[in-house]
Image (cartoon, rainbow, N blue to C red; front, side, top):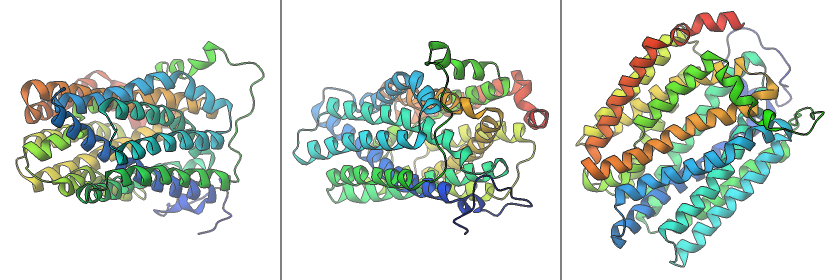
Amino acid sequence: MDSKTSASEPLTGRLAPLTALRYRDFRLLWLGQLVSIAGSQMRIVAVNWQIYQLAKSSGQIDPALALGLIGLARVIALVAGAPLSGLIADRTDRRRMLIITSFIALAASVVLAVATHFNFATIWLIYGMVIIAAIAGSFEMPARQALIPSLVPANVLTNALSLNIIAWQLATVVGPTIAGLLIAWGGLDSIYWIDAGSFLAVVVAALLMQAKTAPIKAQSRPTWQDAIAGLQFVFSTPLIMGTMLLDFFATFFGAANTLMPLLADQVLHVGTIQLGWMYAASSVGAVIAASVLTSVRIRQQGAVLLWAVAFFGLCIVIFGLSPWLWLTLVSLALAGAADTVSMVIRGTVRNLLTPDELRGRMTAVNMIFVGGGPQLGELEAGVLASLVGVQPAIALGGLLCIGVTAWIAWHNRVLRQLDEAERQVA
């Protein structure tokens, strides 16, 4: 790898799978987020398991509902942070944003570690730290996503986004697996300490970057019109709006990860080690799919996107109805692969259509759709599971995901003709 390759250098010919990693600053960001996300995924498993155990032992709240409320806590953070996070990402140094948000999330994990170690962690304290970490994440994501196109050339962007997904999914294989082992060995507080330390990887990566990451300063003070410019852009671009709506409704009905402790305990009758496998399974499929996509060009992208989301819904139905661990793991892996295909197509289109000065705000709007869908879906799944049972709730969500995808495919002509739309943009 040539560490001096710059984002302005054009590359010709077919891209190698690791092309984007030739660019030093992207490589730093990629490695930093790989470590940080692994820690965060460990924290997610620990929070879900701890909430489930506290709710079950206290008897004051239904465990399924308690798990669902984790999603509500994260949605509150998204709604609170989104109006300003995108604007700040477009008006300030994006590296500085990564550093500040990493230290905030680090502090939240330290509080969870101390509270767990000294046995004064409560459900409401955990919810509070989840909200703080999620608010930090709502400011970090627009800055990080808006940073990527400035680190690689335009023709390497799809490769960079696929590698970005690989980093994310590798972390979600390693993180939950380690978390499951640590929980089984009684090391719940150690998970939070590891997560706190993992944020330092992003800080180091941001400090070592050499590329210009601060946008040109605006000539006037930011206004409310500036803050909602990203929302206006998304609503005025049918292709972007269509992909965001598809993702929101698919993940809203297909979200079920927060119910995994309940499913593992009451349906599959397995322990925390197998629970870690369940959290990691979708990421195994996602890593395989993303690895293929780093060097494969997707044709007929509209049709591929719609079929991928529908297949994702089918996998969720199988996951919900499965009485066997092996079938659960396979269905989750296939769901992760299908979701990755969708993510790469949507991410490429959004970045190609969005001007740099709006990328932070567009990402903030997308964050509401991408994050709000599964988090609200977890609340919906928790409430429904408390009423009809965990398996019917998950299976029904998968069926609704398929139904919504079919409805959007029928009514959204621009989305069906995604290849044609991209050629018009080019």
